Image (cartoon, rainbow over all chains, first blue to last red):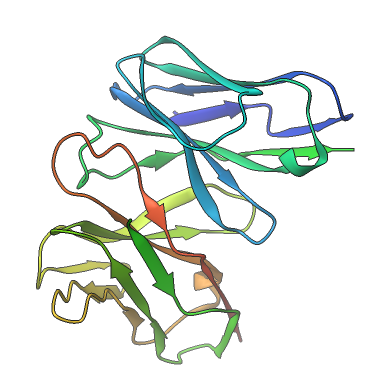
Length: 114
Length: 114
């Protein structure tokens, strides 16, 4: 069974469109995350949720809106896509959000904005 | 703020060569330190971690020791294999409850040739 899954795996779309990426974890974790990996492989936190509550919201344009319908899901909706949004987006989860915990990553969603 | 600096890649080694990837960090207190690995086309997975000074993390022949005095967590392996080809990320997280994020280095791409 896949621990952290994301859909879709690839997403190609036009500038100005709205798109969503879904993430689900079956590990029973309370904390979920979204990270963005740019073309140079640099990874940066975007959002953290704990028990469906937003904990961290880094300097991300408000075109990005995370939604957590329950503890097992954290979806990412992106409005008015721009060329610079092209990247790989990773979802992750951990038990409680404590610093020493391992984070478990999904396979990534490769977004290409044309 | 917290930051992680790791050696720039790419690193190319012959099979059975010795590997060192340097990682230093800046953080207050006693963060937890991690090495994550990303194989081509996949998400990140934990390679090893250490949560307090002088701890040694080890896995799959890789080792790293948490050095508080030099704020370092260098990754080593005595004899690399072609299957070790991947991107390696050093990361830190403030320890304890309520951390909710990892701060990553920029990643080091390792290529091992037969």
